[in-house]
Length: 439
Image (cartoon, rainbow, N blue to C red):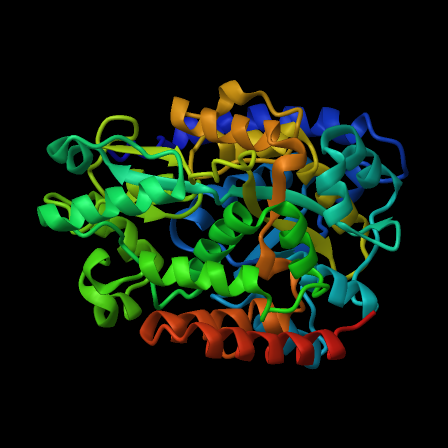
């Protein structure tokens, strides 16, 4: 059930309390920047978030404003952050701060000299609060360039509890069991999967989870840097399993309808009453849509289980996230990144739900429900089992462009599952992207 919006007085009390925390945070860091020195400064922050996510992020901005006197303008980037930023760069108007959803994009902009490296105070905050894996993902040639403010646990399957109970099935623990459960659901009259074919990044996420499970972390790491070709037998074997997941009888509305469905709509398909599908294979951020766009209750009507692992391998996690970088040098921008690296900043969004943080010092009790706490704990405890989203590690032209590379080829594969042809086209696109990648 959607939580009622806080009153104006409650919001004001929250901002005052958080502002006090921020003043302590800024005052306790080394360096010449102080809260007083930021009064009147202006920042533009660009990120992908809109709708519910934007509403939940804006209190983070307002808290920084309330304590420093700076003024922030937020610019939603639309579905393609790289396109939005590149257009701004061509016009000579980069944003002060941008949130990038791909490490590959961070590496590209760093190699082009577009990013300001973190100063000592911000770098110290990142070192104090973030595990090495997340620091490495924000670094190029040993220099820190960003703060991973938002993380995503993508190795999750959300399911309609009533649909499972109606046919007497429980969450499966391996891929074979998941396919068997999907078949039983479809035979009972409820399609197994809601698929957002229009938002083809969801198809790359499904492939990545299957590949990590079936091929293992070593091959995943090799494929991520193109030491392994996309024509490798491990890739074609995963594509064959993917085709079974995306079989028309298992997909809500069939393939043609699913190709026109967006991500938010796919979640609503699974948690409407009666459901149009029993499961959605996607990240922790599904919870925000369940609570904000449906009447389903987390932990009661909607629940979640880990993406099934292989019997012969340890469980692994595909992670994603958004890293804040500075594109125009300024004391206010540097202070804002330092603020984002603190547990206090993360707690503002965490309390509202639909969010998890990679900040190791954020108290898990701030999350609003046990489901969110369990997902956040799983990601933080994943350690060496965590692998970043494969498509986001690629050069952007291959990994995150809707018109080419992984997104286009996997969407075409959904429509026409040609295993060998898709593998060959993926390999050709990867070769072209890695040849032209900076650095």
